[in-house]
Structure formats: C-alpha cells, structure tokens
Length: 572
Ligand code: ADP
Image (cartoon, rainbow, N blue to C red; front, side, top):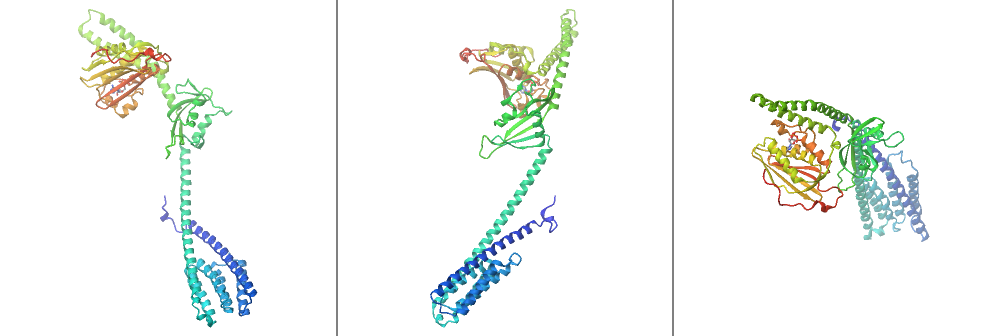
C-alpha cells in the first residue's frame, strides 16, 4: 500500500484542478456582480443628470457630460466585454475609470452632491481586489474628491468636506472586511466539501470492498431492513434463494431438522425473520428437486440500534450443511446398526456366564473371574443400549404417560444406585422427597433418575452427599438432584446435553462413561412434555432439575393437588 506522502508529485491533480474550477466560478460571479454594480451606477447617474438639469444646472456642462459619457462607456464595456477570455484583473479598469468620471462630474459642479457616487467604485474595488483594492480605491476617490474640492475655494472653509472621505473609508473598510469574511467562509465550505467528498469516496470504497468480500464467502448473507425489506444480498444467498424458489416461483417443500415435519407458510425461517424473530443455527431441509435434499443452517440476529428499537434491522446468515447433516445421519445409522448387531451376541454371552456361575462345582477362582466378566458384559450391554437409544431419533422414543406419584420412583431409583454401584461413601438424602403427582411414563422417568443419580455419585467426592427433592408448582412437578461433586465449568454447562460430550476434567481423570446419559435423559424428558435444567458451581457441586407435567395436558388443575412439604423418606 502506498501512503499519500510517498506518491510521486503531480500524480493526483484533482485538488488543484478543483481549486482552479472553484476560482473560475468565483471570478464569473464577481464579474456578474461588477457589471450589475456598474449598471446601477449608470442608472443613478442618469436619474441624477435628469434631476440636475430639470432644476437648472449651473456648473460646467462639457466637463459634466465628459464624466457621464465615461460612465456610460464603462457600463457598456462592463456588460459587453468578453470577460471570460480576459484576465480578471482587467476589470479594475472599470472602477478606476468611474473614479475619474465622478471626479469630472464633481469638478463640473462641486456642490451638486455627485461625490457620493464615489461609493460605487470604492465598494467594487474593496470587495474584489482585497487590501490593494481597498487602499487604492479609497485613496484614488479621496484624491479625486480633493482635486475637485480644491478647484472651488468656497468649499475649503466648509467643515463638511471631511465627511465624504471618512464615509468612503468606512464604506471601503466594511466592504473589504465583508469580502474577506465571505472568502474565508468560501474556503471553509470548500474544505468541508472536500472532506465530505473524501469521506464519501472512502465509504463507497468500503462498501465495494465489503460486497466483494461478502460475495467471495460461501455463506449466504441477507440484510433485512426494519420495515421488512431486503437491502443487501450476497451472491451465495442469491444462489440459496434461487434454491428456495422453484421454476414457477413457488417454494419447494421445507422440512424441520428431523427431515420429516413439513414447515409451512408463516413458520418458514425467512417469514419468521421478516416478522422480527431471532434464532441461532436453525436447521431445515429443502427439496428443490424431488429426491434431492439440501440441509441449511439459518441464523438471524437483530442489529443493535442506538435507540434500542425492537424492530431494528437484522442480518440473516445461511449456509449449506448438507454434507455435515448427511455425515451425522450416516454416523447414527452406522452406530445404531453396529450396536444392534452387538446386542444379540452380548445377551448370549451374559446368559452363558450366568449359567456357568450357577454351577455349584465351579472353582472359586473361575467363579470370581466369571463374575468380573459378567459385570463387564453387563456394562457393555448397557453402553450398547445407550448408543442405540442415542442414535435412534428422540422423536421415536416410545413413551406411555400415566398419573403416578414420583415419590415411589425416586425412592426406587435411590435404592438401586446405593445397592447397584460403588457408592464411594456418598450419602443420599431423601428427607425433602415428598409425594408429588406427575403425568409421565414411570419406566422412562426411572431411566432418567437412574442416570442423574449415578452421575451425582460418579462425579461426587469421596464421602460427599446427594440430596433429592420433589415439589409441585402450577402444573409442573419438579425433581431436584443436588450433589456436592466436582461441578461444571462454563464449557461443560454449554455442552453437557450434547451427545458424546464428556467434561474435560472427567476425561483427564479417566472416569468411565459414554457421554450419552444426559442427552438421552433430556430427549426422554422432552418427550414427556418437560425439560431438564442444570445449575452448577465448579468445585462445589451441581443441581439437575427435572420438570415434568403434574397432570395430563388439558386436565383440570385441581387433579394435581397442592404439593406437600412434609412426609417423604429419610436418608438412605
Ligand atoms: P457420562 O456420565 O457417561 O460421561 P453423561 O451424558 O451422563 O455421560 O454426562 C456428560 C458429562 O457431563 C459427563 O462426562 C460429566 O463431565 C458431566 N456431568 C454429568 N453429571 C455431572 C454431575 N452431577 N457433576 C459433574 N459433572 C457431571
């Protein structure tokens, strides 16, 4: 990049050319003003002459008319001369000639008051020729005045003869300073216009650069005005937009992330964006050609406006994620078929191990080896089950909700983790578990609680505590699982419900796990019409809250009954 100072001289002639053009404009205006000034002077002289002769002129007529003729000749010159081709300085001839002409007229009759006419050439010279014009104009006019006065001894005794020179000086000075101020303002305006032009040029350049950069990106970018109009669309978006409209101008079918649910009309991402909604990484499938699907990820963000206008403009970013989505689908398909294939031989292995373990004549050493093999085969089977559940779509998890009391399910789950796993001396506190109605599938809710409880023990410290609590609020039943474990950092909190995600700390410490439990649990709870939330402080502990419907949707509220705060189990 070249800095402006390093540019060879004379390369950029624009400012100088512009200054010359500006000067030419000023000159033409000055000439027009001068011609007008001269015309007014000629008019005044005409009227004055008429009045003087009407009231009986007593002065020297030839001298007076010599002055009048000079004024008219100069007026004709001022109007008709090709000033555009003559240097501006030559216009000085006209006011100088006027001073001579007015001096002659005053000489012809010093008391007729023609001396006042000196104001015209003085004004002209002082405003058009800066300081020399002011000094020269005033000086010459005073000389002319003095000569004509000296010729008439009657006037020398009159004090009023000083009045006109003083007045001419004042007129000249005012006109000179006014012209200077006007010139300074013109310079300032010119400078501001130049700065504005440079800023405009820069912004045009940046706009062009931005649109070139946007066009090279393979992300579609769309700018939505606050009135819903579309003002910017890059090439990639133009292409995607083309996909979103078939040959007849109608939209091809659009499906939700699951690839099955059809999205129509007002629910289409662009319609939502135009309505003012904001969303992140919304994934949809479109089928521009039958049997040929494309996956798009669409994000819409409002642009921050200074006056926090809720209808502020927005930017829509769209990109083709067909390859990524297809890869994910292929992975799920592969994982589910491999897991499925693994289940049958595993079940058979477990069955045979258990048969062998039932043999009373089995030597002790072989029995303990078989018991270890049995435990690990069990674990393998549960892992395969998890992988299978995670790879089959959440929407397909079968649930059969019914009215239940979660107290029993929570207690049974707590009992199973205490007896089932190495409890690491973790105490399970059930003192705040109270009867609470819920409209859920008991088998699936148990699966969720088993997972949360086993995590609460697995990620706890030796001798820690897990507290369980139930409550009913409005039409929701809440089950809280609180632990005094390792806690979660920001990154964990943002990702723990993602499939196959495992916290960095647990990976480092080699704690066993698949990273599927929480994702499966959340899918199940959502299928039941609820959700899971987590609160955590690193190094202090975490609280997972399962929220499920307390009554069947549409049932009257009183069916649920108020949540009781007493009763429930003790410490397991
Ligand atoms: P897994 O336990 O098999 O790794 P999960 O899906 O159940 O899989 O959990 C995902 C991750 O979330 C875990 O690897 C762990 O980092 C974190 N996590 C889950 N429960 C807790 C908890 N109670 N305390 C701290 N971290 C937890």
